[in-house]
Amino acid sequence: MQTNVDQSVRSALRAGRLALRQAAQAAPGALTGYALLALGQAVVPVAAAWLTKLLLDGITTGRARVDPMPVVVALVVVGLLAGAVPHLSAYFRDQLERATGLRAQDQLYAAVERFKGLARFEEPEFQDRLRLAQTAAGVTSSSMVSDLLSVVATTVTVLSFVLSLLVVSPVMCVLVVLAAVPVVLAEVAMARRRARTTWGLGPVERREFFYSGLLASVQAAKEIRLFGAGPFLRGRMLRERRTANAVRRRQDVIELRLQGLLALLAAGVTGAALVWSVRQAYAGQLSVGDLTLFLATVAGVQGGLVSLALSLARANEQLILFGHYLAVVTAGPDLPESAAPVPVPRLRHGIEFRDVWFRYSEDHDWILRGVSLFVPAGATVGLVGRNGAGKSTLVKLLCRFYDPVRGAILWDGVDLRHLDVQELRGRISSVFQDFMHYDLSATDNIAFGDVRAAEDPALVRRAASTAGIHDDLVALPRGYDTLLTRLFKIEGERDDPDTGVLLSGGQWQRVALARAFVRQVRDVMILDEPSAGLDPLAEHEVSRSLRRYRSGATSVVISHRLNTLRDADLIVVLGDGVVAESGDHETLLARGGSYAELFRTQARGYAEERGAVQAG
Image (cartoon, rainbow, N blue to C red):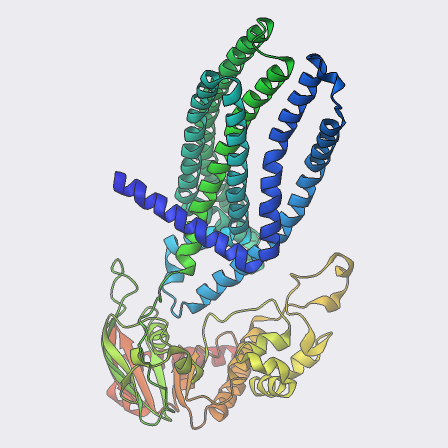
């Protein structure tokens, strides 16, 4: 138990040091100014209490012949400081929060960018941690620095009041301090409980965000309205919200009861101190100034300790949240990295999948069960198989989004794990089946294939022409600068149709192809259902463009439309996680296996469609 406590304390101290270092690096001037003002604000109430005591004693004890103006002037200065310091402190705090938040956000997403694979993004626990880290980067990192400085400043105030109270009555000083100890411990304990609750509710809130996102999603709007699924999704969303509310309500009740007991304790101590001080004053043991100072110090110690407890609680809660930020920022690589990565040469021989086994986690079934195949350099290889056969998984492994659990993938004889992953991906271009629709301009959507292309309009237009989307984009209200979304329309432009448009599914498919083409010719071209969503004529045009574009490059093509694979040099049929058969189109037809069955089934379907059209 003690070990856990020590570890928790060390973690908190480390997080605190890192937060302060981050603030010092982001805005050293603002941090210094804020810290000095916080300390100045800490001594103002103590100075005011002592100056008031001196003034009252000078008036009531016959020492009025002593000029009171220096004390009055000092009180006026303290009053001015009390009024001005909070505003100056707020100014420096805001500057610090902005600079620190910017730096923390940059470091967080730089760390996320360093994750080369996809596995972490598919882990629910990591998603919860990342969501909390995003909150910490935006607010918590700067708030924690503010809370830590508040703890220091409040400690100075409390110690000053304690020393002042000690001068008046050591016994009452001890009683007041001891009475405040439970408050401090209780607030810290409640802060820890709140942080644990926030972490524990991660899955619940993630599901709530998922359902609310679907209800507001443009992509899901058609099906939700057609199928009348809105009430169902709203019910699911509200159920998760009610679950979270119930947990937080139970916590609120516990805190309310505890804080009520602590408030009664504080009121009892204050009442006892008031009775004692008044009796002492009537007995002549305390002067009017002493009485004023005593009452101010009792209130100051109690209020200061409560404020210190709240600051400690907030700082502790922020430290726990900041821990999630640190966990992401300091996380090690998600894919093993070679200490001396081998430069990635131009593909000359080919890519070999050697006895590749893969599953997404130990809780999942094997997707690939010992796949071995060779993709010759310059050849076009088609991957065929039923849904779930492992086709898309193979190309993800080729891009090294994951590593095989067993076996290896070799680039001209070198294991991909020994290559520089960014160099490897720089030699690959692809169109994935689940390509992205970016809520950006047409130029940006295409230039994402090679961000340098954003400064080369001619290259973007050539890629669009190759994909067959150039004429459509030129015809948009603002041409290639037109936003392919209506998400960012501002209030004054809501009735202006030129501020954003929505493309059809087929048009988006061609934009995704242009995104791949803008990378120009790479060693390997991956095409995962490149003509999905296109009509037969468009499919023919795209296939012709693709053949022309990938001429001389190594191509891996996944398609359920087997007619598009007839000219492939090699067709590999996957089934049950293994290579069921392979060969060119004619060889596989002659063999009469699963490929031949799939091809003839599709051919009959096309023939029946043509017959129906002619009959109509």
